[in-house]
Length: 282
Image (tube, one colour):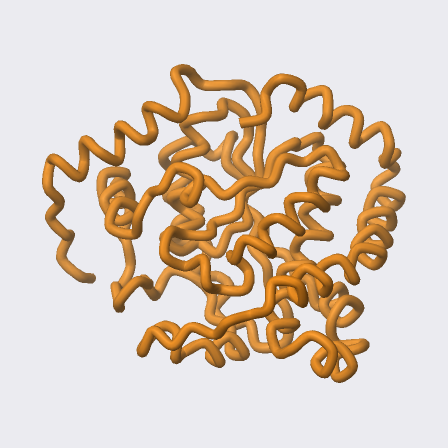
């Protein structure tokens, strides 16, 4: 285990001031976090757990195509239960292999030629999006938070075009989809400070990232140059948006199937979420 970092009081005051400016009192309501168990997703859950008084749902993705060590995500999920209480924090590991097959692999080569290699990462993202939308609607959860971090906006899952396209789809289903670290401008060092203050192990730090507390994606190693050499791939925004939009019909099919199996009416579920969000959108 690495020794705790030391942070200046100036940095500590600055990051807590950012949080104080976000809200003056805790609001009712539950939320879901797209949760890997790493630094970004854990700090998002911790910050928003202080903002909202309802249930905290930590939703971890897994599939059978190179997703390894998924149970590492339990480490900080247990920390979150210690901090907020086991009756308030729920962690689920969700195998989306069938969705990934349907959204990505069934037409992989044609999509690869049309859009580019980013379809693997966005295939995971759209699979997760379909299942989280259904998960939220079944449970009446009107908010989902993504863990895009300051300085990582070059990644295809975090670039502005991706965030915009996904937020639009979530909103169609009565779900407010937000990016707290970007919107509050909390930097990586500030994230580590908050993690340390909360009594959680940050992990092994290497450059921007921390390791040992979240799953590893073998196909994701294609981005090793980003991590080691700052060789950031540029993705055409219009192609990224077009790819996400092309998945919408399949996403809707999956959402509809999940709600039908749960005996939940789609229109009623969306209306219920919209009522919760009325005058409450952050």
